[in-house]
Image 1: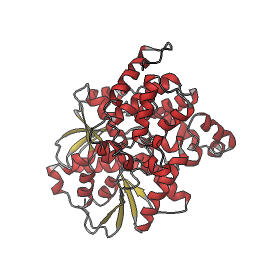
Image 2: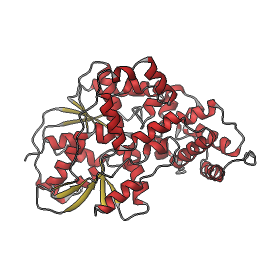
Image 3: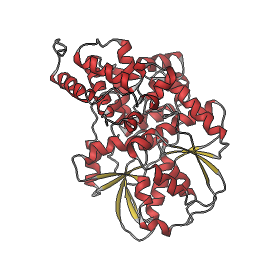
Image 4: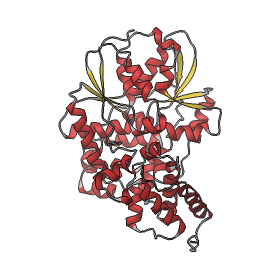
Length: 412
């Protein structure tokens, strides 16, 4: 079947060819299907990886029209990449999904409101300004009003008003923090966009641990978003400002504490520069100076949630367990692997709440059944979404990053 003959850009035509090449890797065996969270919900073929590959092939070849139903099945994919781990043919499903969403944007551009929100989230200065506005009395009520909900629905993020977490006080970090032990080098710390606001305690914990290991921690103010939110929406991502900021700071290794940011930053920064992007848990766990540090006992139960991006992209889940095992008396209770995703998936929980909600509900039921003292997760999106779910059900269980607990128990 020839490609669609309607006039289109060279970009769209190139995307079609790329999608067809990737789709041809799939032998349609279906071993990926049981791993797919969206398939588990409705048991529909088009809501499975195999089904979406077939739809992407049809869209790229011109055999299928870009109807709202077809594009909806593509939009429903969480991007958890559990299917890739199960695929014997090693299909590059991540690449296919990103290319299909880029083609979707060529066919069906995002609304200006959605583009504006994505651009704002990606720039820490603009994001902090918006959050400052949110602290003005009455603004949050307006956002949660019918008018606010209508705006967010038009922007393609209908759940934002309902899922907006409590706004923390802003915190400005020094560009460089000196080590608390003899200096062993300089290390870059990536702060992110949303994480720079809602994961500040994790950054503080990372700084504490790295400084104790003897590192000068560098956090350039010019760093920005990793680009993941734009990529998930099918838009070009640009981490050049972040790459240049760390190059100017003279660091060759940048650590990332949010598993959802790791893959995007690694692909954008490490591919064409001298900077190496590393997963922070693996970096700390492999440091020989770690044995010098002592940690205070904590006789509690910690439920451990492993984000999809930690398992399938960043890896490092073994290192997280090894680090937490250094806290005496702490009992670590991993959550069941099913469902494969908690529903957060970047901005997915804001865009597809009807699919995300049952996935979160199941994870929270599993969590509360363990009667833990704390829920640990290594991704900011999962932390926000799971924390919101607990608050909405009047649960007071704290949701924290593993490094936050580790730094808290550091015996100084």
